[in-house]
Length: 449
Image 1 (cartoon, rainbow, N blue to C red):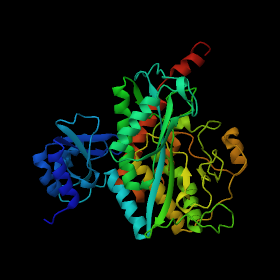
Image 2 (cartoon, rainbow, N blue to C red):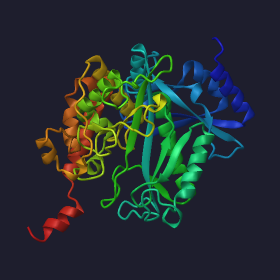
Image 3 (tube, rainbow, N blue to C red):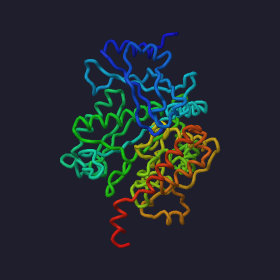
């Protein structure tokens, strides 16, 4: 077999850094991180023939009758884990999952994103993303009484922001793993925080988001607290988002979204407007992927701080898609921002469906609706906005499931295996939720009905 520079680097680093275990990372369909450890003497075989595991134990993978799977490590993702001891060190690599006959496994979320990225490349584009990922710190993991660490608000400092040391340690640890960070700050909710990752290609970023979520939780645990990416953990505080900035670059490194001669003055090319129109058209259909839990729709409520209306604008943060205007006329900064996703989404699938919607908009030359500027859409109910002609995202997980199940684009993008699994699994979640009697209902109705 020809020498592979990345694999050679891994094998040498394992020896020089005293690595005794290499963790193979991958996700299930819903985005939960899965891992098993491989010893150094097995690494050469792992690169050439993969490492076997029982796929029937992974949600969304396979049944007992076809459970054998192979994990092939991606040598370019090798990193030593900085939170583990330097003696007898531990490293990680992300993996692609294959069947015993060598085919890419259609239930592997990373493969789905690779397939969509390849489609963009065939059209002449590189898909770049830069997410803003929000989360909460709590004193513990109590489901009955989650206790925030502070009562700070947006950009607060000093005594109101008790998590500044946690954010600092998290950023330093991410940078030690080769993941550059742009910003970190206190968010609007009590003990709510945000760390923004510097944009890069979608596959690298999906790996980075999964690493980021684990690092946030590891640092929190070392400080004796708990970090949660639940979309809406507190009834009386803002939910957590994963705003996704995105753009297409051509193969020469030029931003295909940028046009200094845009007659509307937004600096967007015709291609970018078709892409944006695709996001708006298909957002209701891919909402099950970007907002995949019952709790996600507690954040996406009319009158809240999360956009639910199929609209776009420049400065308007109440629209579903925003065109950031921090650096007008700067080609590298030209991008659009989808504001509906939440941090509980599987980033591999979320980036896949966004890209699929945008590319379909380009292919079909979809016309972009007029922007919404100078109007706070958060002030209106869904009914009031519908009367203005604005469509909305699904109001509940149940509605999202129905739109997703009927979507040809989602089935084409994700494949039959993942599409069917999500429909079946989420219908069960919705059914369980509908049958659950909450304390709110008992407080409201038990004594009066």
